[in-house]
Length: 365
Ligand code: SF4
Ligand code: FES
Picture (cartoon, protein in one colour):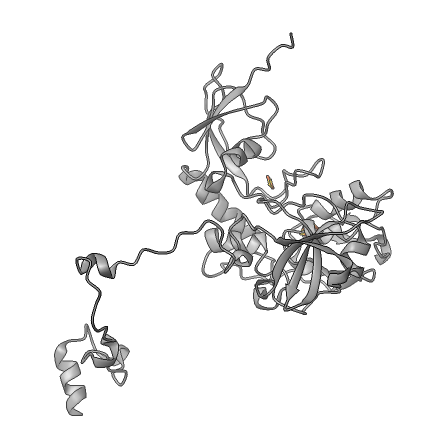
C-alpha cells in the first residue's frame, strides 16, 4: 500500500489549510484565495526561477513551525519561502506587511511613469491595481526619473523600458520558451535595462508570450498598440487547429472586429497555455477561429465590468421602508430644495455655512 503523504498545516490570516510539503506560502495563500493571496509582480507559476525580485509578496511569519514556533525576525518573500507544518502567517492581518507593501509600491513607482491614461496596459496592469490599493496620492521623489528610448524588438513587440520594473519574467519566458537565449538584463543598478544584445529582434515563434507575462506596459503588442482600450473590448474564448501550439486563445472584440489575440489567463493573471506568434499576431478574423463563448474573468478587473457572473442585484429598499407599499410619487429633492443653490460659492463663505447665507443669496444681498 502506498504510504500516505503527510500534509503540512499552515494558518494564513487566521485560516488554516493543509498543503503538500514544498508548497510556497504564496501558493498556500492562493489556495485560500481572495485578499489572503499576496500580490505577486515577479513570481509566475509556469516560469522556473521566477520570484524573489519585486518584494510585493512579503508576509509576516508569526510562528515558523510546530517544532520551532519562533517568529521569523523579518518579513519574508512568500513566493520564495516554503510552508512548514504548524506555520502561522500574517498577510492582510499584519500592519507591518501593509506598511512594507506600501513602501515597496512607492519604490516601484519611483521611476515608473504615471502614464496610465495613454498606456496600453491600463485596465489590466498589476502595478496600476497595486498602486490603487497601496499607492500614495503624491510622490516624495524629487530627482529626475530614469527614462529610455522606445525600442521595436522585431515586427510585433515594442519595449518601453521606462515602464519596466525589472521583474525578469520576460527574460525567463524567452529563455524557457525558445531554444536560444533571446534577451536579458544588461548593466547594473539604476542603469539596468532589458535589451536584446545590440538590439537584435526577438523573432522566435513563441516570443509573443513575453507580452502576456509583463505585469506592466513595458512590452506591448505592436499590432494592437493604441488601437483600443481594453475595457471597451469583449473577450471571447476561441480555438483553432494550430500545428505549433494548442491554439486556445482569448479573442478581444469590439463590435465584430478582433482587435487582439492573447493567451488565456487564470485568476492570478497568469497564462494557462503559451500560444504561438501566428495565432497571436496573424489570425485576426473570426473565420480563423471556433468561438467557444464569453471569457469568464474571475479576477477583479475593469475588464470584467458589465460581465458580472454570480453578482446579486442590489436590494430594492423603498418597499421595505414604506411597509410594502409602492411610492405614488417620487420627487427629485435636488430640483425643489431651497438648499441647493449653485450660485453660492461655499469656499467664499467664512466658517460653516448658515441658513442666513442662503437667505441672503436668495434676496440678492
Ligand atoms: S519588460 Fe516587463 S516582463 Fe520584462 S522585466 Fe520589465 S516589467 Fe518585467
Ligand atoms: S512575487 Fe515574490 S518577490 Fe516578487
